[in-house]
Length: 218
Image 1 (cartoon, one colour):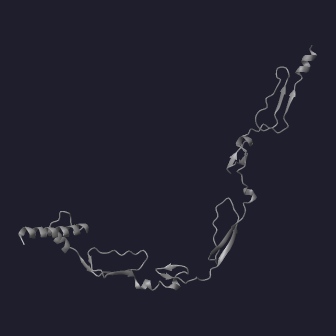
Image 2 (tube, rainbow, N blue to C red; image 1 turned 180 degrees about the horizontal axis):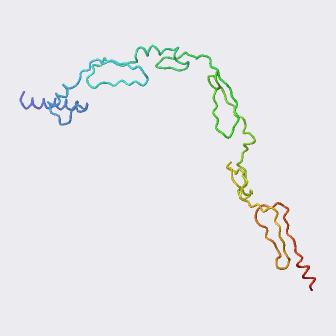
Image 3 (tube, one colour; image 1 turned 180 degrees about the vertical axis):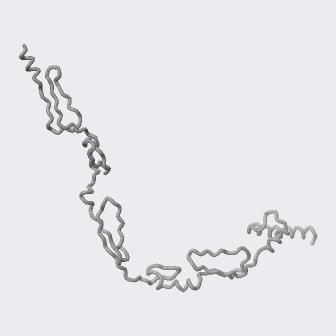
């Protein structure tokens, strides 16, 4: 075998080794044969690593390096012993084990509540494990639905409070004119403009005696 052939063979072997090491993140694309050799020698021999997991949140971190393929990671023996049918609720399968536990007898309470203007928390009383049902009564008359209300502030006397169609308490703005009294003389004043607002119903508009006086003077 010629020297040139041997060099070519070594270069080919280097390239194959470099390609593999580069894919593993242990060498660069420009690594020399010596670099590749150093990289291989730097690989840790982990042999057969064994690990256990003892909690659902546990994570086993696989160490970098060489593993011979016979290492194992498994649930810790003490935890495996707990995964038995009697510890798993009936109808649930956990890690391949179908549960048979039907639970101890529970004491449930049925409750009835009436709506109020405040938030309510409905919980079981002492001595009960929980609620079996909650019945909500109809809205009381004092909490009547107000979505059909059409009154507005100018329809309600000033400073009187009413509930608008959104359920908000609102102050009225209508002027209270009470018992308005006015006169017309039929000569220069022939009409009276009724002011906007509320009237008590006892107000009057009367005719003065100016016309009668004027006629008597003819």
